[in-house]
Length: 254
Figure 1 (cartoon, rainbow, N blue to C red):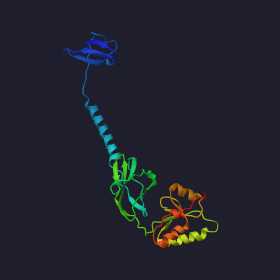
Figure 2 (cartoon, helix red, strand yellow):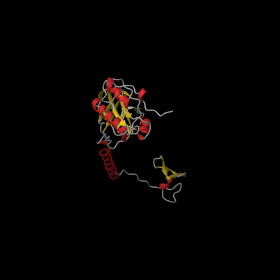
Figure 3 (cartoon, rainbow, N blue to C red):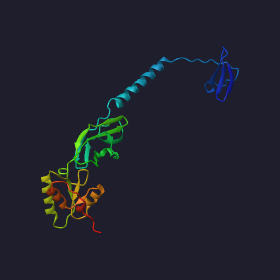
Figure 4 (cartoon, rainbow, N blue to C red):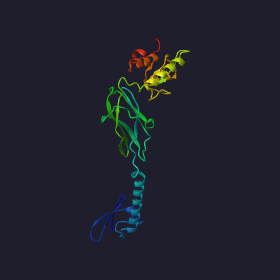
């Protein structure tokens, strides 16, 4: 029996004197207090089975797409070593369906205070290391699917007498000087087992030049790579160990 209609809600009174609140919108048109309505509520097993199968299919799809192919651990390698730094590089990350939050670098189990490099950069330089000391270095990728560490690499920085970490780029020289200067430096680089690289970047440790101008000079300043005169590398070879660059800087005249 309809007892009261109020604000979209009907108060129904059952035969056993129980009050039931029922949405008046679901009642037939023209119903008023005192009218008697018949309401039937049944379980629908067929609809339950259909919903269950649909939900299980969705779960299986999510598992197949996101749960069976986790990201791969970083494939880490040493790109370069000097007396005070180590450059690490890695192959492109297999992220599967995960997203990258950040890249963390660890030295002897402690996180380095290094800004997370961009994913596409593929390398990071760990600086401020002690001369001729072994370190354990590791990279961890933090993703939406969890944390994935690389293999821990044991790397020893070079002793002062080890000049093989020197990698130079040639800058600008005085007119008529470049050919002889470059030839002389190349010969020294070969004898000390160093490297000559084509452009300023993560592999370059020094720029050899005479004149403070040009794209190489500007890029070296941007990368904070010292620009030194050829006499610096000559002194390194003659004295048999790495030399301070302070007195060999190529500077703009005041």
